[in-house]
Length: 361
Ligand SMILES: [Zn+2]
Image (cartoon, rainbow, N blue to C red; front, side, top):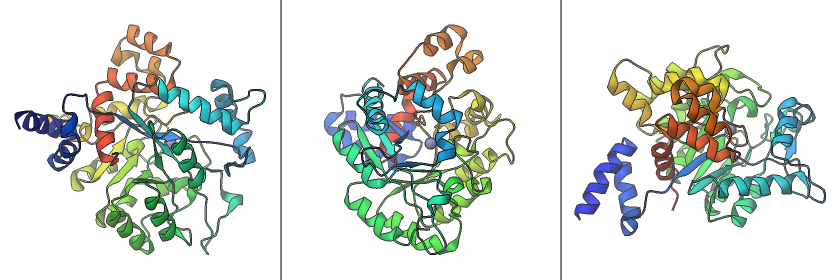
């Protein structure tokens, strides 16, 4: 009992919310001597559709420097293998050497028209949920599924139930690239069902720079209120951050929502990159008041945004030149991002928190 009580108070500190700490204690009492497991809650699956995966990447994206750089970085072109096969292979290698217990693999739904049918001409990239489940099934000891459901699709409720029945406990919505206004009250029923099924809703917030954006204002954190008001647990991906040149500044809105909604979290995906240094710093030291700093830090969940690589050198002022140099030499992208965030003081603790919030069992 003493062990359980000590563990409970330790976790309450880690998690920021006692009810969540209790949940983890119940789940892990049997393995009280092992270190708490860790999760990267934001890892992308991509493909071009070779080999019948169903994935799509629009021509302008395929021809972009971002895509070409990733193909080179990950060495996706290999004789006798499709790009999609190779991506899964590389992803698996990086997960294996990451130092994390598990990663959440994200799908990407399409844009939908006014009748709830896919609008492929406006869809920049697409990763079908069945492909997410197929990849996760091949690596179920280290991966969990995070399908993507655009609430605009005609069969959104059926797809939600289907994904839940297949074991998903997370789902992702990307409003600025999927062209969906999640604050529209017509989506109330969708979010009520998410709450009833205990599905954690990940939503992109802040400024997007890796894919074509239909409307940047759809990424405003204030639009999360409809889902939060239905009782959903919501993860604001990227915590409302952007580049120094981006307007409007969405980060303060994310922080003010945190104060009002205890079931709101923010993930740290892409925050290890050079152009997010300012906003990552603002998040970690948001206020001169220690209690406000602690509030924000206690609600951050570890996420990398793999395959987009972290840039430890950009954080040299904060982690020291020697550490930055050491991390720059790390070739495992998940490990590089995880260790950069650990050097910044929130890596492991936020990854343990991710594991609990994501309902991993
Ligand atoms: Zn992402």
